[in-house]
Length: 435
Image 1 (tube, rainbow, N blue to C red):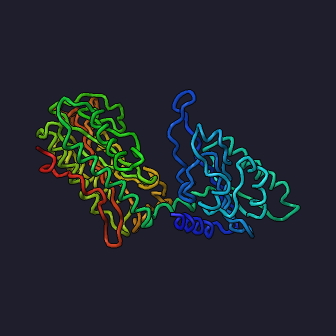
Image 2: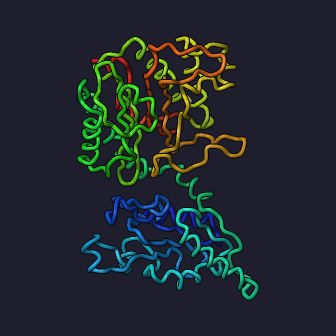
Image 3: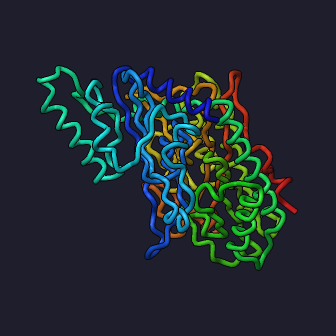
């Protein structure tokens, strides 16, 4: 992996030219009192370094004659390491992470100016840490004041995401291997959940089964808080309480992904707790499945990022009209977004180091074009939320539909000649979901 991290740094440095890029590690997060959550590194920092400790700063200075990759890290400290875990330290930061030079984090203010004074721009993401923002701005202001004496120095600050996000949008073979492993573990977990779900069990029991497999198979754990939503709970998009007992006529919506090597999977399936769809559940499920299949068919090089969503919306709208939940001419219903009381979210997001991964969806008026190496989710749904008010001029909702929530989500890789559904190992056909 160190070769890959180095290649990423070289690619970024080639793009920033005479600039200097600064990346701050993620802060620790407190769970309660003096107990911290398990540490999770900032994705950009990890993407470029593979370094997994807090209180670190990475600097990329392609214009510097000796030091192009600089790490500031916590020094070794036996007493603190006994309590909080081993540290890499200064020497190992060079040996194992490929830094040209490494310094104690306490020396950042002293050493940083030498990597900025010949740069024409500072690449730094403002906003994550106010105190550190102030530190970088202070260095920037100091260099601006002395600019007339040198004639060199940064005259602007630019978010590195303008360059780095595009790099992260295209997954390398190494990244795809990690994502496939995250998928493989999640597929096993979802399939086990399908087999073990039964009336009378609690949502949290199924959550425990899923997350047990995530860790048992070497994953880091859930990629995000697992959603295990039965009955009307499935109409809450980010339901995470997972504390209800499942009933015989419920559907169970499971939205759960595994993190592996910092990369994520993201899968949703909806199936009957008792093993048999009711007629209403089946009718809505068939619409969502048809919409998802058509959306996946739109995932191919050269298509707009919006093409899968547009395809899904059309199928969903047509289905809602056929069931009497909407009325009117299809194109007009879509243009006026009359479907939104039943389908209120988008169909896709990028997937990678972050579950909702970086990468623009639109360049001004022009949507992002799908290209090989990109990974996105395809996740249409229908939600007949209790107390939903129909859109203007639309029919009242027959009570027999109320409380049904359905989503089907797969992770899809754009390939040279179309797509690959990475999560195809989890069944979604009605015949495979019914017992």
